Length: 554
Image 1 (cartoon, rainbow, N blue to C red):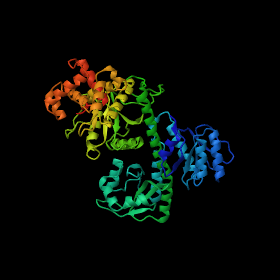
Image 2: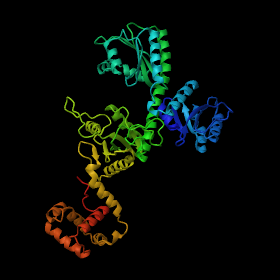
Image 3: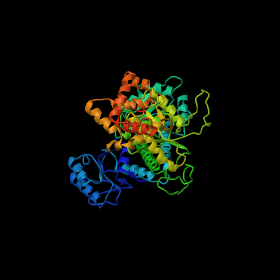
C-alpha cells in the first residue's frame, strides 16, 4: 500500500519535516535527489532539493516537479518558508511543499525517508517497525558501552527500553528490573524524577550525572538523544566514577546517530498504523473475504482489496467510538489508540470512515470467560468484554467517552452491515435520540433495536408529502391557527395505551380535560383509534413531526 506525503511528514514529526503547502492525497513511492537543472524523475517521487540555493531555483524545481507529477518537494529553510515559493506551490496545485529543518544532513534524510518508504511498501506490512533499526540499536548500545566501559541501555522518552548492551554484569537491581520488564520500574522513575532528571532531559542536550541512590542504585551518566530540538530518548550508563569529557563527546556522537534511528522507528510505527488503518477501512466498507471464510489471516498471495488486513478469529463487533467535545477525527483516533494501548491492546484495530471513528473487537463466545483470582472476568484485550471494562475504568475521568456496537458479524461479508449499524447508533446518540446507559458507556444494537426500528420507520414516513392524506394535516393546521395542543394530546394518548389517567399525568392536566380534547380533535379530523394499524401510523407520523414524548427515551 502506498503512503502519502502527509502520512510521511506526520509520522516523522514537526522536529524534522513540516508541510508548508499540502497537495491532497499525493502518494510517494520513492525519493529522488534534484540538482539545479536536473530533470525530475517519475510520478509519485519525493524530490529533495539538494542543490537549491535561492528563491528562483526553488520555484523552478517546483515547476519541474509539477510537470513530472511528483508527490512532493523538500526544501530547506529559508527557501521552503519563502512566501513567493509557497505561493508558487499553491498556484501549481501540486506537488506538496515540505520544509526540512536546518542543520540536517541530506544524506541522513535520504537514508531515513527511503527506509521508511521501503518498509511501508513491503508486502508484509504486519512487520512494520520490527527488525531493521531495532537491530542497529543494540549495536549502538554495545558501541556506547565500549566507549565508556560501562553497561548501557537505550530508552525512549516514555522510559521504555529499546535496546541494551551485552555488558550488564556490573549493574544494580534497578537496571536488572528495567531490562527484564523492558521499562524503568515506577520506584526508580520516582527517584530520578525527584532529582529533576526528566525535566533536564526534556529541556537540554547537556549530559546528566546522577549520584548513587537508595536500594543500591548506582550512579548514572545520561546522554539525551534529540533531533530538531525534540527529545526522542536517552542513553543511560551505569558508571561508578565520573567519565572523562572526551568520552562524553564520543557518546554524544553516538546519540546523534541514535536520533536518526529513533526517528525512523517512530516514522515506521506511524506509517504502520496508517497502513493498518487504511486496510481496516477497506475491510469495514467492502467486507472483502479473508480467503478462508473464518476471519483468519489470508494465506500468502491471497487476492482481494480487503484481504490484506488480517483479522483475528471472529465473530466480531464493529464499534463506533465517540467523545463529548466533538474533537476532529484525527484527535479522536489518537485518543482512543492511547486508551487502547494503556489497557493492553497493543495493536488496536481502529480506523476512520465517513467522518466517524470505528474499531473492530472480538465477540468472545459465552462460556469462555474465565475468572481471575480477584473475581473479575478475564477480558482479553480487543474483546467486547475488555471494551466494557475499559469504559467503566475511564468513566470516572472521561464520562463523555462512549461506544456503540452493531450486531455481531460472523463472516467478513457481514462487516459492512455491522459498520452501518454502529454508525447509526452513534448518530442517534449524538442527536440525543438515544441515551447512553449509565456508567457502562456502551450501547449494543440488541439493547436499542426498538429505537432503531422506530427511527428508521419515522425517517421513511416523512412529513413533506401532505402526510399522505391522513388526519394529522388537519390537526396541524388547526393547532397552528388556533393554538390548540391536539397533536401533543394525541401523542400522549397513544403512548399510554389509551389510558387517560396516565396520559393526563404526563400532560399535567385533568383526565376530563384530556377526554374533552380527544372529542374536539375528533371533530376537527375524525379518526378510528380502535385500529392498531391506524394507531401505529399516527404515532410514526407524530414522531416524524417531533410531537409528543419520543419513544427513544429510557
